[in-house]
Image (cartoon, rainbow, N blue to C red; front, side, top):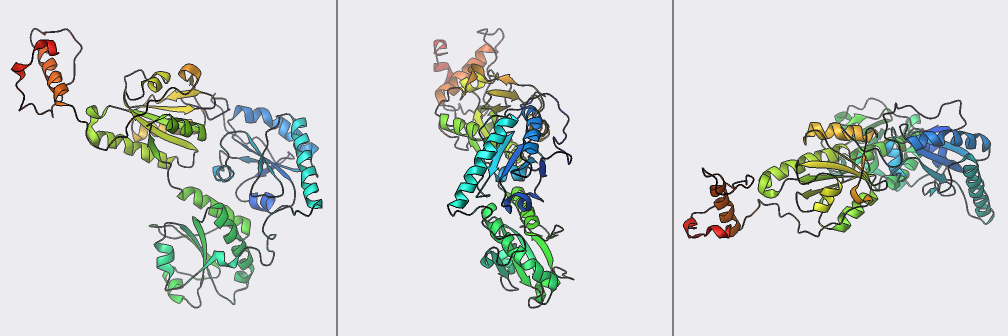
Length: 466
């Protein structure tokens, strides 16, 4: 299977290993320590988001290590394996590798590093950012995080922790489409008292980072004993995760704000809706999707007259299933009908045959790869699984640019309709071509079995109408 590598990275088969180790001055970051090390820090941080298979990332690694050593004790330098920890990459809008972010005064809004990839260029940029941070602090602007430090009193907003009771629990939690992390506590419990400021601070941060899609709640289990009994609460505090339609699961992570936030962000990534599957109706649809995402996955489906509505919907359903399965990837999903966008088909080497077909396009590099296996859940899964690790070979998009796109009407969801004039001609051609001997030596034309010719007198048609 020929597959498209992601963005600016090499596409040869590569073994996957982390690029940094404990012996380096580069701090290895992950969802468990990122908030503690970076977000809650007063230090300036330079963080590289990389993928181990990425050729450009491998080239950068020695320079990144040199820069980290030179900046030791002055500026913190870290690295995130965003292929393994894609929730962190998605959280900060990482669309390609390597991506470098500068976490300065506002840790929740890092700046993109746009400089060179040499250690000297990285060090210069770090010192400039540090100088700017110090200048802001002299001017009265505060650095560091917007929230109090870990275990600090009063961090976060208590209103962000939802008070849950026997009366509102089912309506608020079980009937919600959001994910809930619920603490069952007892007011007299010392561990619960220690957890309270962490839980409150985490609730505020989770609300911001997950756009309100993951919520934190609390149940006083000594008052609402029915809930405590229903969920088998035997000790305090007990934290459970609730997702609609699923059995609750025990939270087994740490009790610091950073631990709770990291788990919430992972839950958010698991619960995000799949990307929209769009029909290519005009140039804007193709351009926006392919330019806004790492990759755009495009299917060219058979003509509606060849499959009918049920056949087309079965293909679209397979695409939606795959879009949902790979929803954590920053990929766009598009489809078009065979013959509707011939320039697009030509640029991808589809060439008017072999439908349904699928291609993955990297618009930044103008490279693409075609699905060579079956257009099925299994075949596409294999294609996308390999695609997600950047292995395989590619071809250049014909013309080196996105092709011209025709403006077309959206599919109405119905079976195709053939005009009676064309239906009669197809029927007449079929009769003439496949009579013995054949009237004309044309390639075989399909016969539409569902065409109603009961009100048409074929003998009244002249051969020259064909």
